[in-house]
Image (cartoon, rainbow, N blue to C red; front, side, top):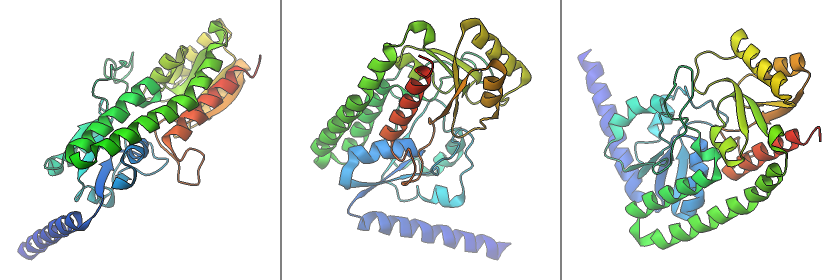
Length: 300
């Protein structure tokens, strides 16, 4: 046992020395984010001045993510850690105690949260604030501030990159919003599996209906399904969607029982790999928004 403890201590010392040497020898900053969407946002602001990595993998369900030792080892020599906040990264908090010496920033700072209305997490913030592009602007500003704080000599570059990135997002998403707002109000319902789209429905001025609330421990129960079916029938809703990281079966079941259209998969929590359909945050916003728009217009 004594030899094992000595070996572990030596291993940790080697890791620490390697981390310090690695950090000192890099020309670029190393930025770690808790999930892929934040990584893409941060890379757009940092440009060539930083290497940005996500702890979670592409396509992962991020709410109950189980990080591996390899995932956590990415943080050891980081110059900056970027969080979402709003209780999204509970899985990472137990590890963060080991990295309190590394600067960090919570990117939902200055965003007004939408509380979860019912279920296991009633009253807590819905964490998916990045789905409203007005909030995305705040995320980008918070990233710019965090980078500029640790790298003051390049703050003008971060500001320029941030402004260009914000304009690109607005240019791509505002025309979709205009099209969605042209659809009659009574048809602007977004029905999904999980209540992960409260901020998106806020932005597109839609009514939200979902089978289970975000972070719920119960998903697709008979009671939940019946409630959604009743609301669909009472409001003559014509289409239902589901997120990419959960089972599509409850949504398909409801579509069949109500004789409405299944509009397809929506993306919210994770980016795909580089060759996938939503390899960037802007791709995710566009893909999800266009899928919703096309679904709503399907029966026009």
